[in-house]
Length: 529
Image 1: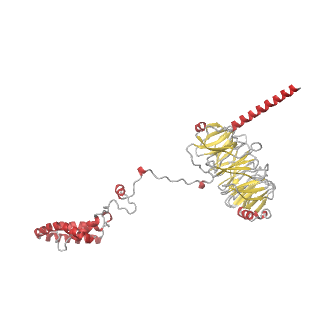
Image 2: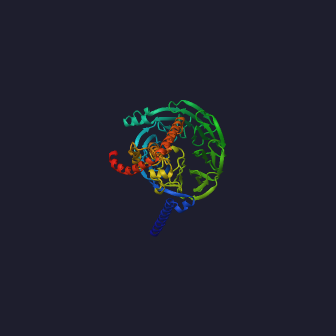
Image 3: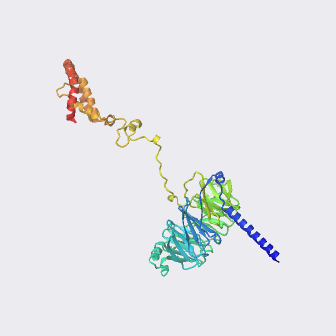
């Protein structure tokens, strides 16, 4: 009997060791990152990787949320870990409310993260995770929240859509008037006949939502005034998205169509063949559909015309102008041509079974159930490309040109290039120099009784022209200047005749004047200065 017990104990210990080894091997496979060499073969590289705070004994990853600046990992117990979406820098971890409550996917606006846990709505600071306010809601929510910069909208099981004012809720919470006056945080309530199972979609002035029975509503954001009500032929099968002023809606009858958000008029329609359960992914002017057990489709969001389709693809990851990244039925990362849908390559993702359909940027985010997260991007694309809000694209710095190609500012550069910059002298003028004032003063040094000669008159006129105005700035000829020129020409002729008569004497006086001029210039120069 004792030997039997020992044998049974040995068998149990062996089974335990085998199970532990299998668990460790499974964990090792899940934690194995794809090699950089394998990624480079597909034109990809790993930007960063990190790990969320998760109790792996009883918890697992539930949702991945991303916007242009942050990445959030939500666990089934309500724990949230925050990272910088582009660098992977760890920011904070927060346990929101009690564990094992219904956890919906969180949403963000510019500064806050909104989380619905049970019957409570939380607003957290995206940068540090601090709770800005929390609100106990009047019922059991049935869909994830939707937020803009003024309101947050939540659908409920009783068919109601509630709108809560963000500023008023913050004031009530800061004043300690919540939960006593929680009803004051509500702006309005709109009641339908069936639960609101999909998140609302906001426009500029209206908000659209749908009930389970296929009724789609559009009401004004401020006064909940009904803009239109549209009845579909079948219940809605997936969350709908907004493209400009159109709503893109999928229904249980395998149809996918566009609906004007403010008029309620039907636009184009596309039949997928099988029902669409996953939310359509809108990237700029294209929409990607993933019907159940069917082909993946790329459609024009303007016309609904399909560009291409590919079978056995189940999840969207990211898109760039030239490529689309998806996941097939065997959890392989598949690279497709964005123009024609051809398969360019595949890579096994292993234990990375949590995939984010990133409609905000061109980054690829995948994670394991234990919280290991990885960010990939195309080689050569160091900066993310934003799809949904391109105006939030960071402004890149302008780099100065190389020193070898930079021309220093100054007069020599202006002479070589022939261009005017600032107060530099044009290339057509004689550039100013230190000797120019002295040269301009020389005619004043000539004795007043010195007789004029033809050579002296011409030299004097040239010096006066050089001192008064540059050649490039000489005004255009007019009748007045022509008359003046004729008078000066006549005066020159008369002086030339007189000079012919007095040429010998003038020549002698001119020679004496030339010899005396340097001495007089040197003597009178300090006085002129």
